[in-house]
Image 1 (cartoon, rainbow, N blue to C red):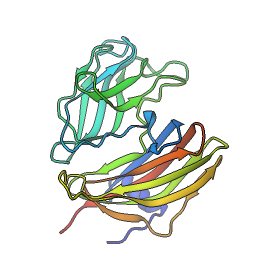
Image 2: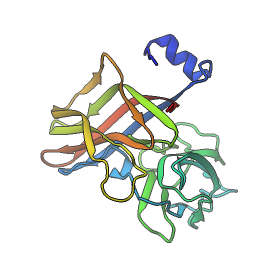
Image 3: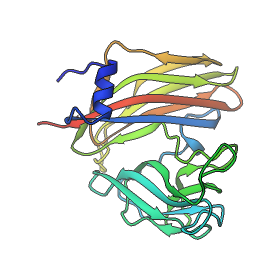
Image 4: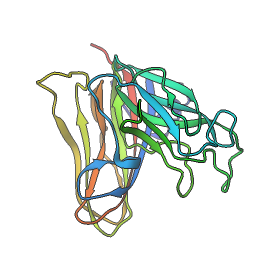
Length: 259
């Protein structure tokens, strides 16, 4: 199976004209990266449990509710107990936590799907911070903050290829907004569904050391992969001193795994 990352290929995949491929655009931002490696995602979080977990979603504002001016419904994308892709849309209840119907092993995207406001540069689609967390006010899984300008969806530079899918990753884009020195790793972990030792190792697929205050397009001659799902892939970063922001952007092409 061959891949050609040209304009017509991307256009035809996104238009659904090449049935055997799915395109997944991943981008992440972490504006509080410290001196230890953390995922390039809002809050520096990407939960990787070995079994499906019951989740809930809550807002920091009472306006994010089914009849409110903010987020009315939110869609969560991830993997279920069988490590298969699942998408769920949940009605918001403001400050009251709402249960997510299907338990998840991974959650890699959350987005506002319906809002009570016609959004503009001054009127947001959600009013509060939207938090996906373990049921019972447990650990945070995904976060859509409201500070600055509410962005309407997560910025999570990590992904888990579903069961039954294989994937390749195309050119990466990296941005570091600080004059501090950053180290960035693109990591992979095969066989995410093997939950008893021996486990598959987490491996560096790409490492950039001493990145300082610039934007970089990482163009590769061939795509990385294939990664056979379920497999965790994504970015982690750290600074040598202090804190700063790191952003990443990359494209994933998925296709059915054949044996």
